[in-house]
View (cartoon, rainbow, N blue to C red):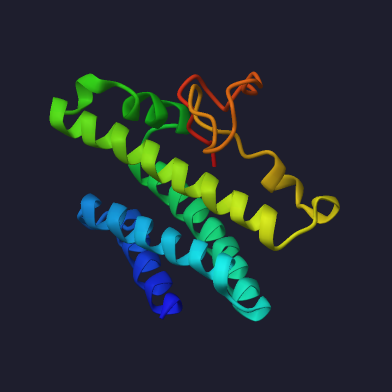
Length: 164
């Protein structure tokens, strides 16, 4: 059941924010599987299933923001310092850096697909929350099916990370 997957994923996020060692590959895999299930709910679910999926997305967003703030606080660095650390390849082995960049791109693409699903299947354009309109692709990577004709808006930094 999708609710069980949501709970399992949130547990992993909470453990990481508490400073417990977590398997990042497991977190990545669980996140991707959850995004795929949500996309399926939006494509094939009943209106009630879609409503529940949208609520899970909202709850996940709130919890990830809260957990991110805990991680920043526990790191002893400012948000900007932590972003700078995460974007410096010399802080990682070449293998870690490559996997990190690949994962970041894949999670972002899956998130953008999910937002597109919400836009198309749930909400008419005049009812779209501003937050969903403002999601931008990582620089140089347009959402699937969209040409590179629009100039991307300036992100929260040169890296494409979304600030909390």
